[in-house]
Length: 562
Image (cartoon, rainbow, N blue to C red):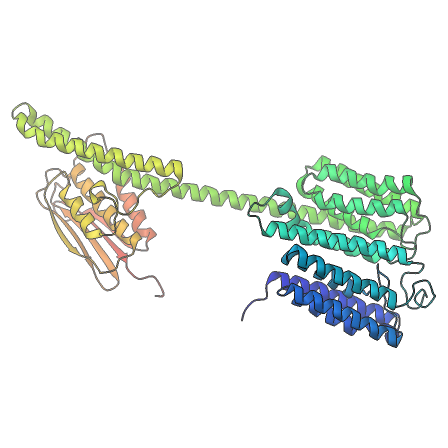
């Protein structure tokens, strides 16, 4: 089953909520008069949903549906219950705004201009044909939630919605054509649900008679803007929001006698800013920001003459919920930070262990060969200088290979690139696509007792398994050179069965290991065991009878459940 894309789900949810609101308003104001506009509103919402994939078709269909619905309403003398724009129900307003956003976002400027113009004319025709807002037909308390609204206020509100829709569409168009995400883009992507909720509250409050004066209106809008940007600087925007809620109503006009007990838009913005302050600030500045916002809302209540005990109790409960929400997200942020820090520490430890294994397996291998050959050269140099020359040549070659390996490791630390790449010579200790050739080259260049090699490799071998096989053989031979230089029989066997690969390296050196020059780091066997266990295999190492030492590993060739 193909999942529904996220934009489709969000738009469907918003349009469905708007239709439910229109149905509720129609029921409270008389279904006989309020129900006829709803079928056209439903079809217009379908056009907006269609515009997600076909914006031009959706816009043209939406304009036609709006005109047809207007004709039906005009004939039936229905009464649309509108909020904000006279004669336009909430779902029609939201669907029209979505159509404008989508055509501006998805279409060329010329096509978008034509579609938006057509939608605007359809809306103006609907406002004109659905009745005169001042003739008493629509301005009755029975059918109109907004009494005293005139055509001018509807035009101003509609123009603001149009500008907002065009701005959102232009913003989406810009970010869809750029790969660079700015800090503002990231903030908008996180804060748009809050902005949408505050806009809906403002729209609903604007439909109430005597909702607020100009000062309270501007204060609520500015408080919403401060709440939107509060995550950037919670204390600063909380103080600005508190000033907007408390000072502007005093300076730009009183709001005593307003129908609503408080500005719910301003209250919601205050709750959001309190939550952000508690989430991001220390205790003292968070308490100061909370106190300022609470005081601003109390001033608003005093100006409205609604300072009652039940309202104060309701406000106190909301502010406690806001602070608790902020504290909850603060705890989540702390847990997330600790989880990320632990994951980073674990990843760094894993990288250090991997580099330590590579350093030990490759560089130590070459350095061990240098030390062994230097010791041999010192023993024979005085009596037979000619015999020492081959040893010096091997020392030079091993030193060059060790230097190359060190440079590769340093490059991996500086650039973050892989420490070992395919295609290099097996003599350098690096894994290639030909594991058999790598192992043979390793045995041929081994500085120590002669080695008997037996190879039975499968046709297909995972790269990580082949790499580990090469390292296991290399480290085992390095240990032979360190601890059993007098061994006369060294055997390496790599053979596969149906489900696993068996590696065995044995020698007949003295049972009591020789203490190597320079000491032993003691990490060789540990590193080999770690490599095998990471692949889900088994590892054994220890004396093999009366004399000698053996290293064995079994690596699975099939994953579990395969």
